[in-house]
Length: 141
Image (cartoon, rainbow, N blue to C red; front, side, top):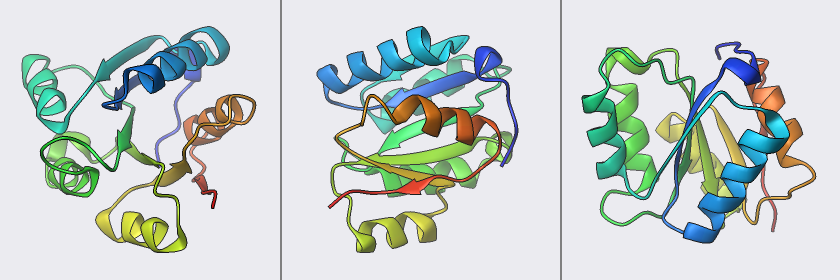
């Protein structure tokens, strides 16, 4: 996994729940101090945004597993197949936080896994660990 200073990080969040998008935005920008944050609601929106910005570096993608259209596993595989995303860290975020889901995320090519609901006290530290190049595989039952 790539190491990036959180204050210089470019993070895309793909989450279809608007409340969760707001939580991510507050925590990433105000608590972690992320430089660039983009919130999208589907894999289709992510792929469209990527196409519109072909030279933009995307350091981390926080990708919900359950999305309208293609699920997070499919989107992760599509990103992994693209040479532009070899160094991008892809993190599964999901309320389906079971051992089976975690294993499936590993097999799909995710670099880390964070179960929802997001713990507002732990999430900033999780993101800092990911930015430091450490994998985070944490789920809740």
